[in-house]
Length: 217
Image 1 (cartoon, rainbow, N blue to C red):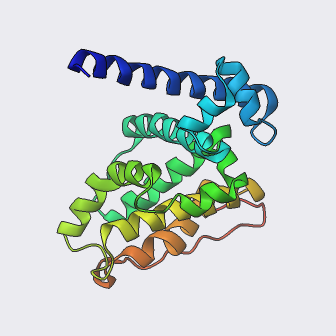
Image 2 (cartoon, rainbow, N blue to C red; image 1 turned 30 degrees about the vertical axis):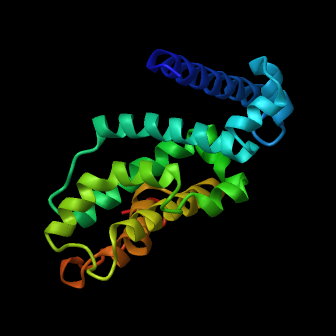
Image 3 (cartoon, rainbow, N blue to C red; image 1 turned 60 degrees about the vertical axis):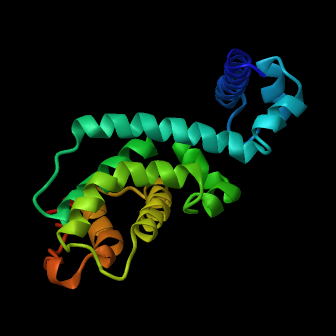
């Protein structure tokens, strides 16, 4: 096969995969995440069901690809909004808070909570989502590791896996209960961030109390 033919075949493959994902978006919006079938996606894309399975062997893998795209959108927005703090503890906490609040408003990211297959593979270091997450967190975590702010017995993939699983846990939490930013920030700091830090860099916890009027202070 000539280089031109190889390039044409690659473009055709990419175009078909893109058509499938665009069709999946339309189907999920029309039927909902739980009710959309591979047959629906194939019909909307104008291809056979076998063609859909060629690119995405399961409905969960279609959803995983959409999640990758949605994570990229969220991350791009966060890059514009996030302000790095002097201490990794504050930076990680603030960043996770922004991520969770943004993800909670995204139906596709919230929809991952309904997929056991997605949840079981999201933190796998060989998965596309893990690679994407590692790229997102790398600048923050690499600098912290060089500064000795992270626990020495954790490698970068373990930390990224923990953050990925924690994001899913936090999405479940904010989906289940109403929680203020102050309360969520404290929870993230205490339950998610502190276990990742070198003991010498962890700052004393500051209590969050609630007044009689129900305001957090």
